[in-house]
Length: 575
Image 1 (tube, rainbow, N blue to C red):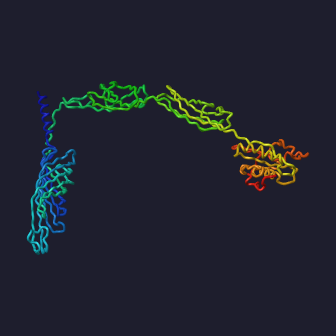
Image 2 (image 1 turned 90 degrees about the vertical axis):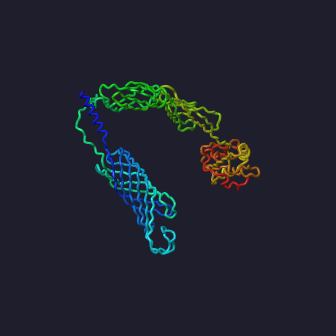
Image 3 (image 1 turned 45 degrees about the vertical axis):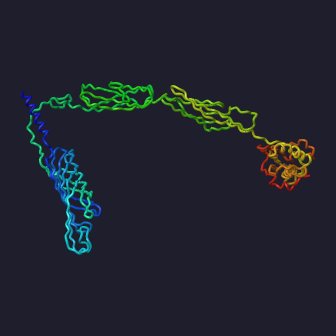
């Protein structure tokens, strides 16, 4: 029975302490006011200063009723000596925010009225001033005009109080929208004036003191499992847990398994924890760890929630990406990609894959020629040997690379070119001459006018090469060049029996006694000259060559000149 009474008494005392007010019952503010009046219609904006007092009664921590009385004055308005005073009397609700120990912001809306009076001293005025009553215009007068009115007013705004001590606070700022409804002195109509009021000052607080704390009372408590002490019957406070997850891998291939393990800190000894695993929000298990097997490609969110009756639930998650299998794919390059028959080209390849294990080095094959490692040899690429024109063949190179599951291939091409066979110059019999003579005889003309004509008719754009020689036993100078020029006149003069081969197509060269390795070819003209017993008779000649279009001149043609550049045309057609 005594224990029950003790508990009831302790509970009542605690309730009384909780019910005691910790805020003042009433507050009184005294301070400075500054008002910026935005007058209606014809009167410009003006400013007034003064003071105000407030009384507020606090019903609870947030709600109060406030009464506000203040007055502001201005002695000069728009350049005129006009004394004007505005007295406000307002009341309304205030809401305070008492979340902080030293700073109390508030907002309020007050309604009431304003008494406004204005007076001016008129002396010797020639024209009526804005405040002069009707009927006195145009006369110099000396008078003092006083006008006043009382109309509706309201304020809406807020401010900030800073606690100095228990009974005094400082208000650095109070800012209100101040609306007055004063009649315009000129139009006598009703108007709203939107004004701004600033205030600052001191607030004095009364009442609301804390009651004297009661003496110690007996407490009945219990000790929780974690060592904390609480009142008997009160629940033990739940503890917080720190939870994190670690996965054996954050990226894996389809079919692989990732182990996800939790790390829990804050749990006490012998506490039975509850585990709930989810994958993308779907429950998947309740063990102390989780084995995730990725079957479909994608990104998975794996989450765990841990809790128990003595702990607040804790949640952590991690992400694992499952990649799909991709067989090897790649590219092949040949450098160079165009070669001549017999040359070699280097082939390189690059392959990529996914989830198939390491990719082996590529192997290369070709549709023609041979591959030696990554080197392509074109010497065995087949061509038509009977075709002397340029030939081209495209060879396909295939690179093959495999992973643990599949083989991937890639191809490139190499163009192999077989050069055209060179067109050789055609040798005709030599035009031969007597010693110290450069005249082309009849046998030589037959070679130039008959045999050479047949070639030029078949290939009109071909070239004629004439290489003149002389023997060492001849005394006349430049016989080699003169013999070549006389031969050129036979084929270029274009009159009489002579041919009309363009001079630009006839090339001449004179080498003297140097035969340039070209053997003597007299044919049927050997008996047409008096060779005598001299062994140098074979050196007194002109080599005659026909070079087909696109062909190569003979090697004996050195330091050549065209018949156009020499004075061949002056020789005419030799007789």
